[in-house]
Image (cartoon, rainbow over all chains, first blue to last red; front, side, top):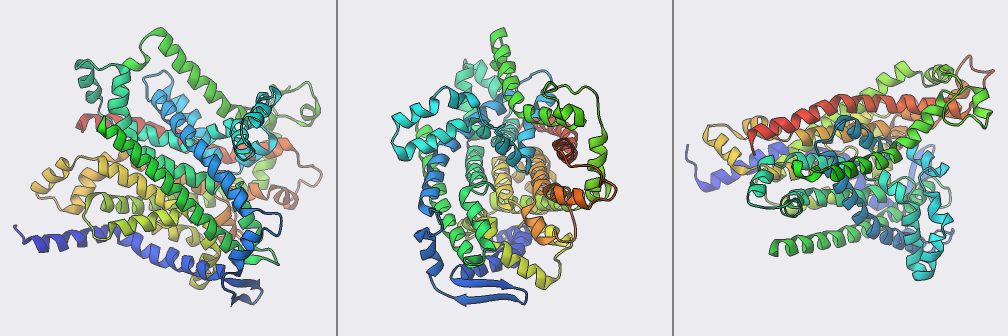
Length: 293
Length: 292
């Protein structure tokens, strides 16, 4: 059964691609072509009519228009607001989800009942119901405003920072709603930890606190990355998001149209790449730090 | 966390207290919706009736049943939810497995592609995809939803690839190697060791996929919405649906009816979760025995 190393390698590549082939075909057929088309659209004037689509190449006109903010939409401001918001929300959601996941993974009574309740945000936050809740104000804490908390924030922070920070406090409940998926991700990861590891650590004299940092957190770290990626994308593509709203409304608008909204979407995409890269670097730095200790 | 975390009376109390308080935040709107949905007109306008209606009034549900055309729509909704969710889970798990277990040249590029397609707002490629599907002739059929999903290009497919990648990467290589020594090929190893040990990942991925397809309205309204209706699409256009439903002409649409419809739409997903939740718990025990 012995094979030459080269042959072994080709074999492995072939096997790997047999696993990946379905995805690869799908990507080429359903995603790559549309992506290039939309890139082309973003550089064109696209007119949708009864007879079909008329495309006239216009170069970077659409992109220039995005920054000129002619129709009361300030791309740079919406995007920077969003970036600051993300910077605060991602850590809050991640930490909160880890805590809840650990609590739900305890030997508690009525665990099934609790887990069913904590699944509710997964159902609601991705559906139309969440918009209803937000519009009705069911998602905010009225106390935050009544107690003059917002004023306090406005006084202590510079204008650019105060707006997003105030947003976060008035949206604490919304943040809870957007943690459902992450909680389940962490529960799934916690279930993979072997209980014997904790027992061994206990015998060696490790306390709860120590085994939390030395066993639980390292075991969750991969999932933290997945959760961060998910949180950013989930918030970025949420249907009530200002930029997404703008992409949608311009799509079929007569004077701007599909080319313009493709241009916004591509610029937004670049911003998201940068945000994700920043979080990725922070994550890497943290794991290195922990590895050294 | 072992048992030590909630040892002691105070520890236990605070665990329950936290879970109950936050759980209440999630439960509150649903309870409110339910309370509303069983109110009749009199209770609706009566300001003294808040949480507990004077009688258990089910007429709203009957109206919603009619407006949503519940039976037929439910079957179609399940078709464009269960099937894509299942196929998407399988395809993305294959992809995640390959990335986690094999040395492939250009893996970095593959990861970049996966990340980038995830970052790209769906709106970007929906119209081009619409044109493409129009050429395929699959618009206004369930295929328009099922086909991309089965090839791993469905709703949030990239995050599922990432989840599976992380799970398969956590599995000890020793198990794979011992299977190889026993003469198993790559596919047998995947079926006999990879899949069973990734139980929680499969459940999680399927659940998310199911819920997201269930809740999705943007793509379905574009691809199948002008002729076929899912429950969510019916809810989305509830007012117009209400107006075209025969035999309701003397009735006016009110919040109570709307809420009852919302509850009817959340119900199937909750049921699926409650059923799957059992396997979730069993899943842990099984992986516990193998002692990985």
